Length: 367
Image (cartoon, rainbow, N blue to C red; front, side, top):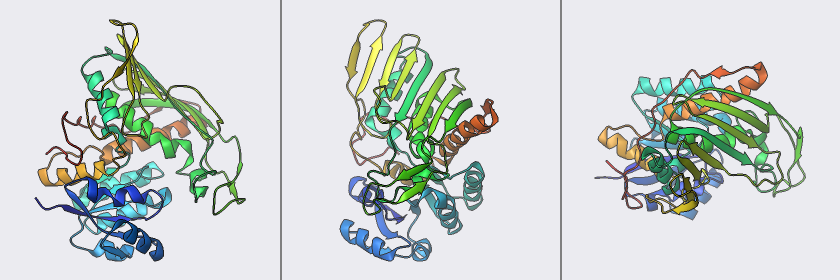
């Protein structure tokens, strides 16, 4: 079967791992890359052996490219996605799907009209660590999930990222930046969220960049940087999620799921591997769990490969637009709940994406 040709728009920091995707997945080929800065596009094409560096207009006009991978900054995710859809191409974007619900709905509606697909990062939930957790839950290893506790606590990105300003604008912040990893993982394991409430604040209205090349420049913070939320899942489980760029140090679990018969310690949802630990009533002690699935190293692009395979077979792809929109809806609802002092019933829902089968070799995807 011929490989599906993809084109990458946005050649910033995250692009490297996607530009290598053709080397790691047997069903996709990176045919071209584009950026508004042509020097950046040419540099990345040369560094990763991509056949062509071109303008955005040229990559959208290429009839051989079926999937556009959208790695632009959040505020233009929707603009680029809609342009790709209008060009008749399926689009897979970095998270979040968009910076607000209206843009997210517009992307999904346009794709339905044109008969193309929408996918979105993160695809880390397809990695061996989280797929092992999914299997344990589905197999009843901890009984019925009762609750979950999740936390992403750090002090922001201005001390390491070369262009950190967008992390502190609408569509950024810890919730929109890191929340998709946590919420996508939770929805993939526990199913859709029914309602949320939350509280949010800005602790440091001004940030000073200490990374290069912008060391010393100041950032005016325009989005909440500490958000504490509660979520009720449609299944009945209750969860908490705290995301923060205002914490210097912490020593709490990233994700723990508490069931009627045990507790599951879930690995970092921003990674593909482990460790996975479990405590059950039967053993009454913690055990390390051997991972049941592959893709335990950095496998970004797995969601694109799965989408490409789904385009051929006609099945649903896993890191899909409905899942991404549901996560976007939940994140926006946390902020709305804080402003409006109430619970927010989510307008969206989604299916749990199908689990990956056990035994897939790295580079392969099921039909």
